[in-house]
Amino acid sequence: MFNSLSDRLTATFKNLRGKGRLTEADVDATVREIRRALLDADVAVPVVREFTGRIRERALGAEVSAALNPSQQIVKIVNEELQEILGGETRRIRLAKTGPTIIMLAGLQGAGKTTLAGKLAKWLKAQGHSPVLVAADLQRPNAVTQLQIVGERAGVPVFAPHPGTTSDLDVPTGDPVAVARAGVDEARQKLHDVVIVDTAGRLGVDAEMMDQARRIRQAIIPNEVLFVIDSMIGQDAVNTAVAFDEGVNFTGVVLSKLDGDARGGAALSVASVTGKPVMFASTGEGLDDFELFHPDRMASRILDMGDVLTLIEQAEKNWDKDEAARMAKKFADQEDFTLDDFLAQMQQIRNMGSMKKMLMMMPGAQNIRQQLEQFDEREIDRVEAIVRSMTPHERLAPKIINGSRRARIARGSGVHVSEVNGLLERFAQAQKMMKKLAQGGGMPGMPGMPG
Ligand code: GDP
Image 1: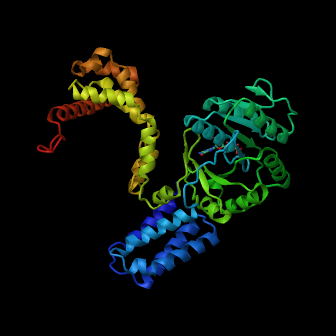
Image 2: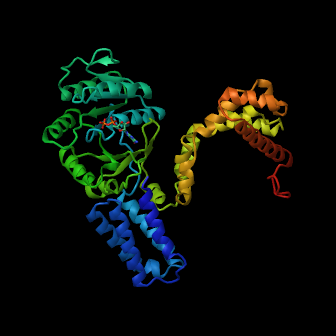
Image 3: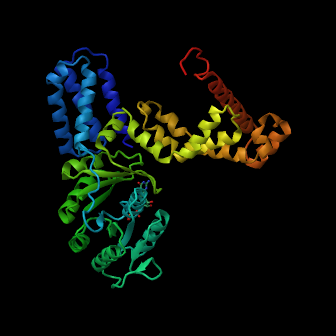
């Protein structure tokens, strides 16, 4: 996510580090570097101009010259201004006061609308809403089927003008405006509190598509119109966004495919050029690869200051509290830490989502990005396979696992014996540490630490 931009900006600030006072020449050189980094990342020219203008003005002003650490002060300014071009405050979905909240999705074909519909529905459902999807994309032959698949995965009903769906809307199948209206009516009758309407996109902006989207908007009067944009489309992003803004007057932006390693900067310009906030980020093909967009946190991530808040939220969301309580009790009772516990811990970690994505939110993650990219998520699968190839008795008493048992376990789990050895070694260390923690009431190897 914005990796190359992030590298360039952090490298620029590194050059400033250690400087006591900043001359005008220092500031100019820094601003020039920032400008280049932004342009290379495809940020739109007018946005770059305004952004760097504000940075320069503030960097030469009193807040920097009076600062104890001028270079840190500049990072702070860039962080604040970056947050500003990303839309300022976090903007949440405006829920309808009465009746269902209607959310319409618009964007080019392939932008990620249908996928987003599923992500949004799943996310809203987890918050206690009862969303429903409406398939008003009748352009693409399999768009309706695709939405149905997504709906099934998200566990929400799909209203579509086709037989065999949750609800067969009784409207002409070729009229997306009628379908959208009927879908919203049906949702209202069935007391769903959120309706997400997927609309058709074209490969490029065209008048007919825009007119259709506009007519759907007029027919259903949505609370939010979300414009979904593929972050990888480069400089075209701004023109596309402006066309959609004129066409359907969207209320918020969703940046999709932010997981790609494209330069992504064009997407950064969209909020600034249209004056509409970025509300969500889509970061993968899975339904959970989705987050509420926080301009402040995203700015920190770009400047490699980490996004610890999102990290904590992700961990909390997926942490199995019962399992954690079970471990804590075991620990307090000084019971033996077994291979089953080891496996359970691994699974807890995996439930938190992609390790790689999580680790990338740590401050300074850009420095170890290469190592992180080599991190193999499948390592946890291998551990699981190995432990599952052991008998219950072996899991409780790993000491009995001799050479021939190791060979059998390796065969059973499809790994090399050295991997079984490695796992048993790591487990032995973890067990030792657990024991010390339980007995000593403090950190191992640190006697005298208050417990
Ligand atoms: P639509 O035409 O706007 O409805 O776009 P789709 O939802 O069908 O998405 C087009 C393609 O992009 C599909 O192959 C999706 O799996 C993929 N896609 C959607 N969102 C993301 C994302 O955030 N990251 C990645 N890597 N792929 C995505």
